[in-house]
Length: 468
Ligand SMILES: Cc1ncc(COP(=O)(O)O)c(C=O)c1O
Image 1 (spheres, rainbow, N blue to C red):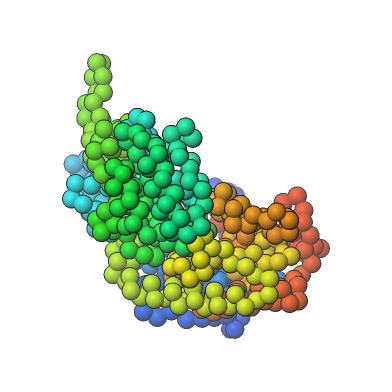
Image 2 (cartoon, protein in one colour):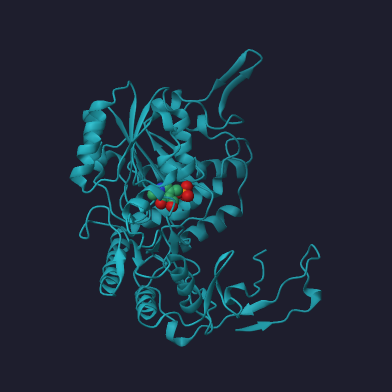
């Protein structure tokens, strides 16, 4: 990699020196055309520094955060030109921005298949959506949740009112466990919370079946769609589910905005999430009357750019659903087939290997620490994946349970999306095969901060200019 030195006269507006800008050129080998017929994402031409020089970045980490769609960037760029206060001004820019904010809400309502009387709220993330719902639940609501869930879905309800169900062996087992638990734990208000797809194994849950079961017992159901929103249809009405939540940053929109949608009655009666401007109907010395509808839980100036970004993403995903699903299922089959035949590689499943799943694969490699694997993939091959327990400790502990303590306690997770290509998948599979057959290319050591290169600089630490 060559680095262009910049003279100190190029200090930024605050007088701080601007670090040198690396010029990263990719090797022809790794230059790939974006998959055709798919909505493009920004940053698809990002190059990653590796030990042997820059290569096209292989984004295999969509379950954590997706890149932004070009249509989202275009919508945000346009909205930035005129944005002003939402529901707070008579000026033209305020009127325009307020209209866009409510149109964004309507777009999201369509995207999630909301009923006419559902409330659609803009939050910050899925975590934030569940925290909001937890605060708004009627008092003494009992919440039923499987230990397969992400911590943001497992924890916000409070330990004392949560009934935790063990990791099931099959869908039938899950149905039986929930059926028994609902029959045993009577309470006036009950809520079942399940993920539409696991962020560890990618396996989907038959939401309609759990909705029917919950309603048969008089309980409501909330669906965590964090791993569905970018990949599969969300449909509150077809599922007959009561609530759904997802995050913009996992749905090809930038960070900062999420969604909670569902039944209005609990939300309208529940404690407002954030006390403040916009959430109030009236404030006098005698007391405060809170608004109902979305305003009740959207106190403060709303994140209108985030809402517009999510709406643009929803519109683009809905218009390209078939192509997106076909792209991901092709890549997923290629990935699983490639990994399955490598000695010592074990793919994780809650249900079974043939279960329907979105493009998420977690695996272990015999004798190799997962954290080292993800470092090697990044530094030796320019690939982005995640390792660890993926904020689903109970599930990963159960799936990796090994009385002989010979198996890794963490896993590597590969997750696919519009920023992934077949070349990236092949590079990952070849990287793992190479690791198993020949070991690492570089020498690595485990230091205080985890795995580090021995006696050489990490190419990812090369200085890069700030984006501002
Ligand atoms: C299934 C699932 N639920 C919830 C979350 C939390 O999402 P966020 O970090 O956007 O709040 C995640 C994040 O990985 C997830 O995968």
